[in-house]
Length: 510
Image 1 (tube, rainbow, N blue to C red):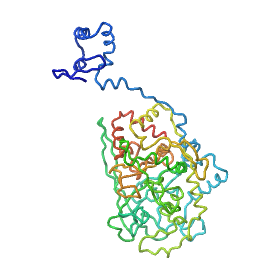
Image 2: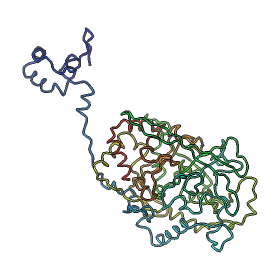
Image 3: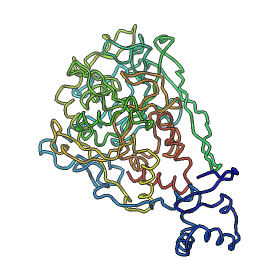
Image 4: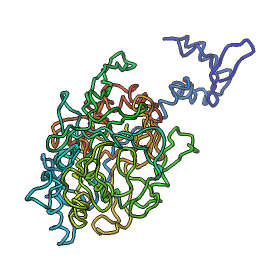
């Protein structure tokens, strides 16, 4: 654009130079236009210029629209096979429960042993079932499947007092432990156990109260979100610290964990940009957490805050914190401060032996990932393109490569599509729990893998998303994004309804 001496704006493109308001008119004086052109160009140039008048001399916005390349909606070869060789074709309620193809024969057998320990109830001691006694004395669930029903996703309680739905409350106080992690409350430790054995009272009871929050779209429509508030209704063993920190956590689907474990550490670190050096607003950072076996800090991969370094420790901590089952990695009985748990029978020095713990680790490592549905559908392809265009793929990285798995060759050297970077991201104050966890601050969460999210309704009979299940559908989950994802959320809101629905269709295909 140039300015004439009189101050009137002209639009200049190539050889053309026309008054700005010529294009605002619904019609114009053709003779004047011809005279204008002929005074500047030869007849040949006049004809050439007139031919490109509407294409070369419009305002910048119109030009950008004209030259914009059309969106290509293409099926990428193999994009439906989310777990590489560790994928399965199944859309039934049992879709998350299959072992990965290609396992060694003895591992295929041990898979079913691990499945048994994962799904069957543990009981209080003493019991005739000596391999499965030692529950509690304080716990949140009687079995792994109590939280991960059908190897899937937990949910918030549907009414006050409902137990064992897969949501629990982590606890701590400000400060750090000797290992650099959360500092336990002196009485209630690192987790609120809302159930107990025998005639004991649980540690505490809680309820959730939801407040409505309205989200506005640019087109004038609205969506109502629910903002949860957690209230401890009664502590049974005395008051906690006055500065007690609580963080709700919903159990996640456990498909494909071994594939995530097999990703080379450097691959994850290469995705990190903690100082946002590229200026794109995304600054994923790794968490480093205490590794019991190594007695040192290791890269965190699992859990909502990437606060577990590997599947074995994740399994051991879940047995310990959620069910009160001790192991060689977590040998101390969970007990509230001021209560003598030695008076309560237990299942031995370690209540799950090393071999059985290893079989549950195996089971949790090799659960196959169901392939996608409807991946060739035009609306799904549009949603996939828009997913990247608005920036979702910056954290939910579509495609990664596994390295060499330390135990299962079937998980090694696979191209996988988990839609995660396994890094921490600031998700804004709306999702903050204000509870640090090693390097994760109170607003940071690990990018959760998206594979399997379109099957939650089928497998778990609900569609509750995010770390505490507050989102009742995928649209609400997107609208809760803030912090580093604020711009992407706003880009989603600015899309026409049909394109927003296309993104949801794409997510439901995963």
